[in-house]
Length: 601
Image (tube, rainbow, N blue to C red; front, side):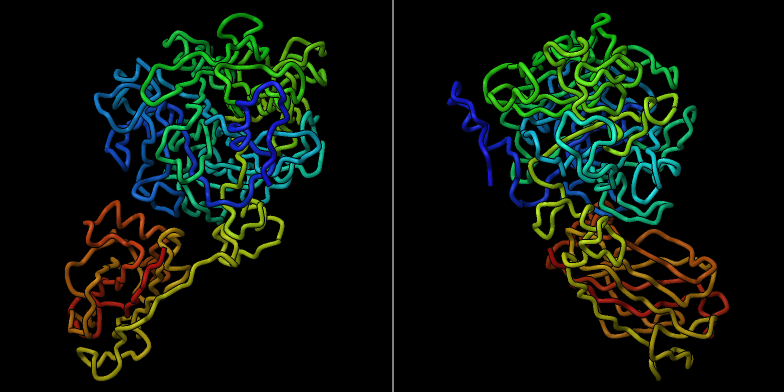
C-alpha cells in the first residue's frame, strides 16, 4: 500500500508522494547506479557499453549487455552518465566542466571530477515508529565492523580486502532518531558484491563488475575498487534521466587524517564546496546548487571544512530545497535529506543536536534540530545500529566510514515477493540457500542440462573405453563433465566442473551450438563442431579438475563473437580438451564427456 504525504499546503506534492513511499509493494529488482573512487583500477578502463574510459565522476551500472548484477567474472561496468562533456551525445553527463581533462586518466591518479554521493530524489519517505528494513550502504577498505564476523559482512570481508566494493543491507533499524544500539536488530549482511565471484570467505553473490580484492592495509595501494556512491533505481527507468534529476556531492580538498592523502578538490574546481548538495536537473546540463552546506549544519568551521559522503533525498516535487523545520518535517511537505560525512571533516567529534553525542563518520545525519543541543547535524541513525565500529563505542582511532547510502522504496532483490531483501531471508533462515549463492532456493531457475558424448565400447580409439565418462586417460578413467546451478541467463550461475583428468595438465573448455555424434579426436571423441568458442586455458591442478562458472553468459558476451553469446533460448554444448602426454593411445591429448545446456531467461 502506498501512503501519500499529508500536506494541505501543496497540492503539487500528490505526484511526488507516489514516488516517495513508506512501504513499497513488491516490484522487480532494482538497478544499482554507483561511482568509484579515483584509487581503483576501474578508473581509466573502457566501459562495457560505449567503450569510453571510466572516470571517478561517472555514474555506472552493472556490465552491458544486461546492465544487471551478475555472477563473475564479468566485464567492466557500463556508463549510465559521464561526469561531464566528452564530445559525444550518448551517454548523457552530469555537467562537470573539468571532465574532458580527466578522460582516460588511469586509476591511482586523482582528477577533479570525483563524485562522492548519488541519489535520484525518490528514496523511502521515512516515518516515525516504522523500522527501516531496506537501508543499503558501502564502506571503504579501512572499515572493519564489530561483533562476530559472520559472513558476508564487513567483519568477514574487510580483512581479506573484499568489502569496499560490496553493498550491505541493514538487519532492521529503528526509525530515527536512533541512538547507538537501539533495536530492533543491530548489524548487516551483504546484498551485492563487487566482482560477483567467490572470495576467501567462500560466499558467492551477484556483482557489478568492479575489481576485487583490495589490499586491506592503510598504507597499501588499492588493488581493487571502492564503491563510492549509490542510488538504486527501478528497472523501467534505468535508461532514463530521473524525473527530479541526479542529486550528488563532490569532493573537498582537505587531507585524509588516516592516509595523509589530500582529497581531490573536485567541488572547489567547479565552484562548490564538498558538503554542498548539487543537482543536475536534466541530462547534460550544468549542475545547480540544491542545498548549501551550512543549511545542513556543515562547514560551521569555514568553507570546505566538511565533506558530505553519502546522500539520501526524497524530493517533494517543488523547485528548490525546502528544509524540514523539525524532525520529520518532511511529512508536512519539506524535502527529506539524510547524509553522512567523510573522515577528516571538522564536524566529526562535535556534539550532535539531538543526543549531544560526538558525530562519527558512519552516522546517518539530518540537518540540526532547531533549538537542539548544538548547531551541528542531528544523528538520525547511529553507526552502531548498522554494525559499524565507532570511536565513541569501540575505542578505535577512526570510525568506520559510510561511503555510500540509499534507502529505496522496495528491496534490491526480492525474488519471492515477501517485501524483504533476499539476503535477509537467507541470513535469518526464512529461505534456504543450499548452494550458497545468495539466492533463495525457492527462486532458483531450473538446470536444463543433459550429459552426452560418453565413450562406451567400441568408441575408445585404442580400446580406452569408459561408458560413464569421456575416453579413458592416463589416470585410468575418462574425464567427466557435470553441471550445477541453473541455466538462467539472468542468474548466470551455471557451473561446469570437469573431474578425473590427469593432474597438473593444461586444459580448456570449448563451447559450440553445433553438436554432432562422437568423432575421433586424439585419444578421445569430440562431439562439438565449429564455430567453436574457447574459454581461457587453465590447469587441472592437484585434483585433476577444471571449474568454469558462474558467469558463463557474461564471459561469452565479453569475449566471444555474437553468434556464441549465451542468451535466453540458446542451446550450447560444452566439452573439455586437455593434454595427456602419457595417454593410452599416445596422441598427447583427450576430451571429457560433454554437457548440452538449454538456457532460459
